[in-house]
Structures are given as C-alpha cells and as structure tokens.
Length: 186
Image 1 (tube, helix red, strand yellow):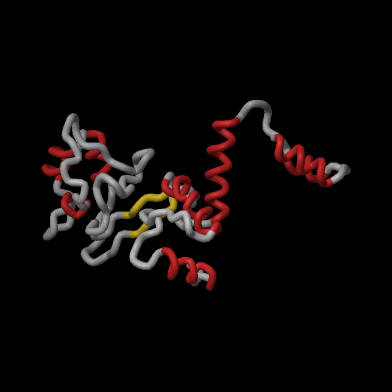
Image 2 (cartoon, rainbow, N blue to C red):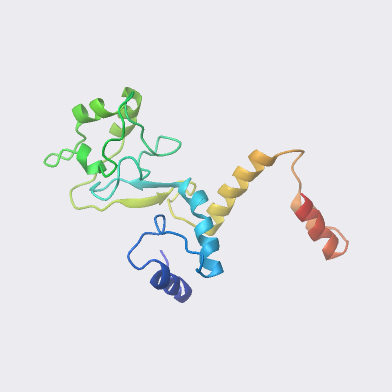
C-alpha cells in the first residue's frame, strides 16, 4: 500500500483527530473537498467488510463482518432485539481455543447465518482485524474499483435504453461542447 500523500495527511489531521472516517460527523464549516469525500461514505460502506482477527474492535450489529451476506451485517434470531449495541464480535469467539462459540452463535443467530459465520476463519491470537474492499479481488480500495462499483449500481438502476458506446461518442468528429452535452444528457 502506498504511503498517504501530503493532502491526505492534512485532511486526516484536520478532520479525523480522534475519530474513524466512517463515523466522523459532517460539519457545515468543513472544506468542500472534505464534504465531497464524506458523501462517498455510503458507496464505500456497501463494499467494505472486516476480516475478523481478534474481533475486539468489531461491533456485532454495526460493523460489516460476515462476507457471505449481501450487507455483511448479521441479524439476530427471530424477535431477539439488539439489546447490546456495543457487543463485539470477540464475544462469539472462545478465548482459549480460538474457534467460534457455536452454542452462543446458535442462541443469537439463525441456522443459515451460523453456517456463514462458521466459515469465517479466525487467525491466531494477536492478529488485528483488517478492513477489506470486496469489489476488488485483492481486497484493496482503489478509486478505479469504487468507480466501477458506483457505475454498475447507477447503470443497473438507471438503464432506460440500450447501453451507450462512449468511445464512439468521444471519437466522433463534432464540436467538443456537443459531445459534452450528449454525455450529460445520457
């Protein structure tokens, strides 16, 4: 992974002093670039999932950690309510032997969800949780993979007519303003 650029360090120092990116509150006085970055969180959250390490910093009902689920968030069994919003994933792991506590999982989640959770590998003690970007095969977040995910979501929800071959549009011999207008209309 590349080291952060100076502008990233500046934004982190100014806006993420003691907070995480996905949990920081948006302020009206924030720089417009930062406000734009914060607007991207919804799209980012749809593709992020934690790989369970210790499980100590993963909140069971808030942080996405079950990779086989579409939302990556587990739901409690039946009418069991989320009584403890601060319940950590580590609560479901046997501290001594490191496998999942199957009895506790069965009491909390439906059988199909328990099967999905049991497929999650728990590494040796001391391995931290790792955040993974699921749209990328390597698990790394890139602007390219985020753009592809957002584009596929938009195209599936907005597909009115046949797909447009953008390379042909940009290659047409016509005024650039007209090309831009066609692109914006589409």
